[in-house]
Image (cartoon, rainbow, N blue to C red):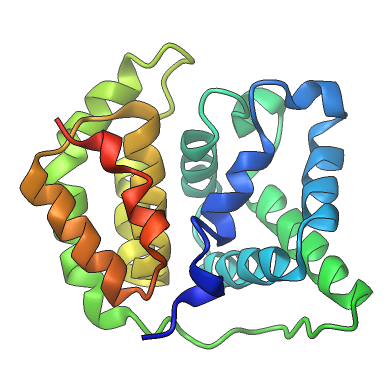
Length: 212
């Protein structure tokens, strides 16, 4: 089975969150940090980001869901509401910068992307979100960086309406940020889902610390 993006440890919207590390403010304004991250990384990074962002945009998710997703996976370093950004405006910015990055290398920037090929896995991802939903909510309410509301319904919406693959990557990020720990049998199911999504081994195995 071919691994997506060469078996990268992460990709797309969930990888883009790494632009906002603990010291990102030393690199400039947040819009500059975002643009620089896309500009200096390989074009496949921008391509994977654009695919995720266009699917999110096409689903017409409300701003609060985009804010919940982004602010959780970057927690506690870039909360959109605290930074004064509307979630849908931020998503449109990501789409524009992704297109510009690909256009700079002569790459395509189609207005639309095909539907997710992983719709048949949505039920399994929704089940895994449900199993940890109480723990995520509890952890988010008491996280040192402050509470970001709405992450569980936002994850559910992405799994059901946007792309189960994206929802699963965001779930792994959320668990790493706010918990809870998971049992071995849960983690084993995550590994199996990763194979269905054609991930490289590192994408799920990089979250082995989530186990109790």
